[in-house]
Length: 124
Image 1 (cartoon, rainbow, N blue to C red):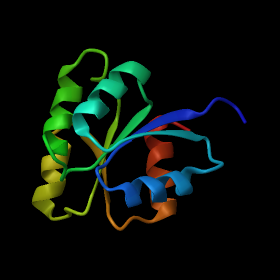
Image 2: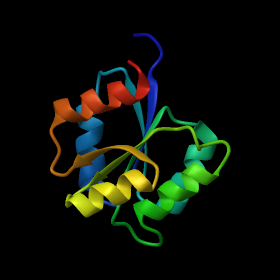
Image 3: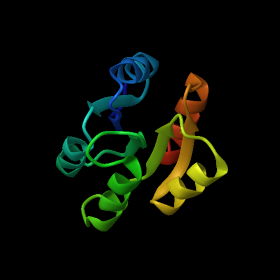
């Protein structure tokens, strides 16, 4: 397989990490994960992923704040962010987009929807 696109998933729910890992198995994506948003920001600066999947409700800082940090940092500001959360009101979606997100996936998620949005975000 040609080179994989790097996906960084930041989510404090280990079950979600396992589900996404299984969903991306044998696809064109290589998954990197973090259960901590502060660590996730550090990992993003280190690996420069092609796309970030970002949960909203997390300890320390929420996904909206993490998204703003990514968009303010020169090395991560152009990485597409897809918010990945159980919060799905119109206000939640608007807040995700105004916090730097290019798209939104509601949990529980559909695997084909996840793959389609990752492919669109990475140009695959």
